[in-house]
Image (cartoon, rainbow, N blue to C red):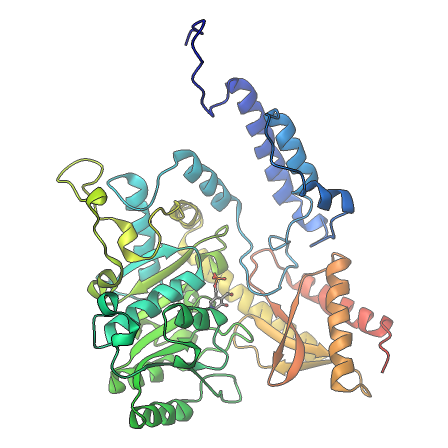
Length: 489
Ligand SMILES: Cc1ncc(COP(=O)(O)O)c(C=O)c1O
């Protein structure tokens, strides 16, 4: 457009020089490919130098910086200092390790730019298609509903809200939790992820509404304790509403007896929710699917494509058997979002299945990677991680200085370096020091936890880049560090 003298030129965020934008973008893609290809050659993690840290104190920019320079700054201060979870020796907490195609999907989703609040467009159809694929992967019927969420915490929260509303006996949306006649009770093992506590608190039920029950030796929910608690609560005037089974606990990967929980929930008229953020996708792994039998009988399941489908963060998913109950928990039709017979607003609004209105286009990164590799490959990769967990257990069993702390059901291995003559506190200090040195030396990122009062190192192998040789190295390095480190008694 011609510049008209005397008139203020209208502005846009589009590049004024598309060739320059193209050159910088090509460079970024080339660098990204090298970055991923060479990830094994870099340290898993490294501490940021002071000048890099202080660069994040820079004030709000008021004037422009050329894109080339913006990108250069990113390559210097951001890219060399990642959390590390795309590295083959990252096994801390519980993450996926991302994938190139998924990253490309995120880029294209942002370029296409659709808002997944809903509407009649291709991205919305793909969002629903990915939810359908999630249902299929875990054996849920096509008639179930579901939604993609930011992650497992939000997926679990959505499911628990539906459970509360379905079992409250009053219209909680209209009258609030104070209208519930008998206080609701939810049940889970004491290994349940903390997001459930946050959800129950946010739902206005109070932390005590979540009864955390003891586990058996293998850290699965103790079914006798569950039966006793439900009977006791009924007698005391509470209303048992929901049992939450864990398909893979965050501490040790233990999988509750889902079939028996489904039977019990049916007998007691409880909502049966499964937190499958870690393990629901074991259902697609040919060697291990039997471990999550009963999952398909749940009323709702939360799963996390950003874990065992390795989608770049964020994407979680919740599926709900009773689609009407799901919709009834979140649907609000406002005058500014009325459906029309034709055009952009002629499809269902996806925001009616959760708490967000605007929603990102999370489906594309999952869709592209599933399409490229096929679901069977993801199933084999899950089996591969589970086999690697067993391999690590064998390495631990054959190293006298290491002690297993909990049995590994799937891909989480809990153990500690435990020379004779140290008390519990000294063992904890020694293991913490080993863990921090492994991180600081860039060798491996592992985390720690406490299982039945014993502090331990925790290796969660949710990583499609890990090889057995990486686990050999981990064990060697732990023993080396354990021998080197002096802990005062
Ligand atoms: C069993 C379990 N549930 C829920 C969550 C929360 O998932 P997210 O981190 O995706 O919110 C996690 C996270 O690791 C988990 O392990």
